Amino acid sequence: MHHVEISQEVIDRILGRRGRMHIFDSLAPEQTALIVVDMQNFFVEPGAPAEVPVARDICPNINELARELRTLGARVIWVTTAYNFNGGTSDCEYFLRNIVGDSAKIERLKEALKYGAHGTEIWQDLEVLADDLQVIKNRYSAFIAGSSNLERLLRSSGIENLLFAGTGTSVCVESSARDAMMLDFNCVLVSDCCAHYTDREHLATLEIFIQQFGDVMTKDEALATVQRKTN
Image 1 (cartoon, rainbow, N blue to C red):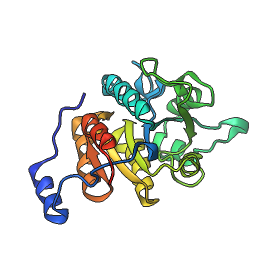
Image 2 (cartoon, rainbow, N blue to C red):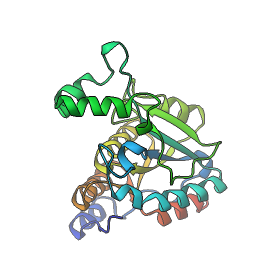
Image 3 (cartoon, rainbow, N blue to C red):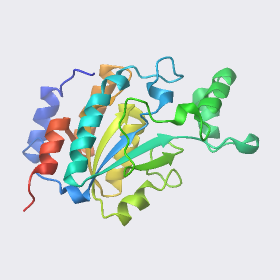
């Protein structure tokens, strides 16, 4: 697990701007969802094409947070990545050509992330219940137009508060959380339920996010905020 702390410089800047560290005093559980991003074999399994080893360390925290939130009446939503590769084209051509590039790596990614592939399945150590929702996205962000139906599901369920967990902190988790904030959801990155390749990259996201996009809390802080009664 990442063992990092937001720097005093950033803390001072936050306090100077809004007078307190955290944005949210309380979050109504019936209006809250835990969004778990990309905790699937492609990113979590040992030896996987895009393995984030730290992602395995956060599984107990995600399970604990999800378990407690369910008892309060909050929703748990598992968001995974998969792509359409039918007919010789795909819905991620720019990504394949310009970000992946290498032809052998492209073929490996196609095999691992096509719909129904092993790489798209949620990692075995995570507790997924029948009442949880599962959403498939085809972009880093689950909220960008055409990526998934997540926004529609949340709006129709009256959910306004989003706790984000998953991997990678600085890519799909951050992209989804930033876009959700721009759509006026109340967003919290749960710091010890997110993972990236390095402490440095993980911390960079936490420090930028808490200044510009939403809140950053540990799982215990987030749970206490959801449990706290609203006025």
